[in-house]
Image (tube, rainbow over all chains, first blue to last red; front, side, top):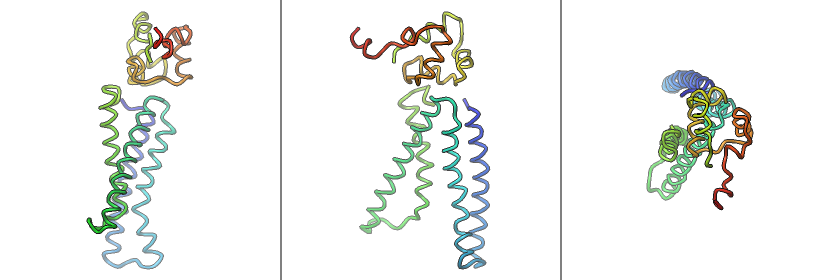
Length: 134
Length: 69
């Protein structure tokens, strides 16, 4: 089932994903061709991060706008799993990296882990609550 | 929390969807409450009680009373 808030969230994330793809392609192209430097490089470098931050905001808006308290609880549980998962992997990796056991990984991968963690959270909701957790 | 929601709903011949519409919540919420997997907030418990014209404790069984029973 999909509530109105969920539909708005879906629309927002689709739009932000398109903006992300465009800004990432543009930034990669601009840096590859050495079009930007100094302050402009900082601005262009930050651009792909903004739609990702926008998706975090969209999830926050979903929690605010979702009027169904049970569905809201499911989202809260899902995001807690995502946060725990992403922070745990990032912490583990950070220590292993400090001890030079693993190579360096860019910190934006924490966001990738977090989005993956949302899938884990959804699976845990289903696993612990059964049909009503889906 | 144990509750009599399914019985009260069945007495009126309502489906879970019908009850969900009347309470302005998802059918998933009604299912979660009926099966005791989710305890509604006090405002939602009051909405349920008012809809069935019953006191809250006539619908939801107090966990402490349930233990002593």
